[in-house]
Length: 314
Image (cartoon, rainbow, N blue to C red):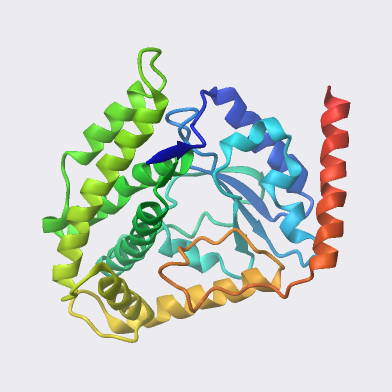
């Protein structure tokens, strides 16, 4: 496979600078700004931010965009834009895996909203992740293109799915995956190594482990192929289909809350920031009405402002 977007070395200080700058830039419209997780391997770990806001603004998708607001030299830390949580949707945080978060600015409005580890929720998170990784694997194989940063981030995130599986689907667990992936990350920037080959190693490790997990899930969901299994997973997540693994009423309530979250996210004008994989909830995703002329004007205005700030900073 062809490999592009190779991760580059970075220091912890760069992550701290990016987070502090972002918080300072958006705090006037933010209820709170958080960092999620930590940069265990600088250069390989993406910078993940979460912003809580209730501000209605036609330029929100530019104002809260890390890639439109931060200096270009910091963009390589971000694989995706910050997550966005409308101020009326705090309850959906219990449906995430974001255990580790640190307040950067504003009020800690999430202190009472911890991720749930109930069996029903573990199952729902597992099915969501399965849908997302199935989409990633299918797209990668179809395109024959490995995006280095995305591949490393996805391979890293698979560890959470396998940890979840160990509790509820033991036959889908992979005890060797974590150690094998850690070995790739530790050696990634070694002078003797080839980063391109390291990306390919990460993909091969991910693909092998996910394929084993996929086979276990297809059997569990009584599906002939991955596409059929993903459809069954979505039906269970939405509460449309009952199953013996978790409560249908729980799934229905959870799906309703996530649909409400998507509606509120779109009502604030955001085209990014989704906390939940679209591959698992395709019917819930809402897109704000298109306004190409306004978008072009706002994009150019924010670009000029960013360039002026970069020039002033030297």
